[in-house]
Image (cartoon, rainbow, N blue to C red; front, side):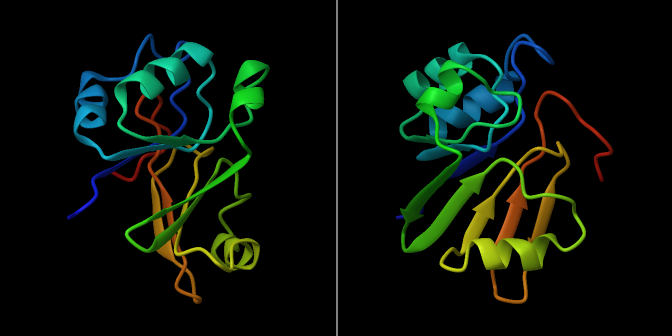
Length: 144
């Protein structure tokens, strides 16, 4: 069986948007696992995603405070079909990211991160896959 993953980050609801785009909510319904890489901004979005998602893994970001930091970890880990995934909000500047993250997460296959709002998809020299889904509500210097 193939597991359907949905990765989001930097939603900033309700500061950047009143709600997630309808397309994201549709994908939440069909995903087996929703991963949120931080900057939720409001606890109500966490509650709504937790209610709608089959399974939710998330972390707090630099714009998340109070209850969000109490309820969410800084780093989350999950294993799906033998794939070891870690989730974190910030990874630092782009230069040297692959090497830095390989050192930080030597026992991980995929690292999902956020913060920049810019999609990122690279593989380090150690084989670590780094993925940033970008932001569904605030596009900054998007490559497409």
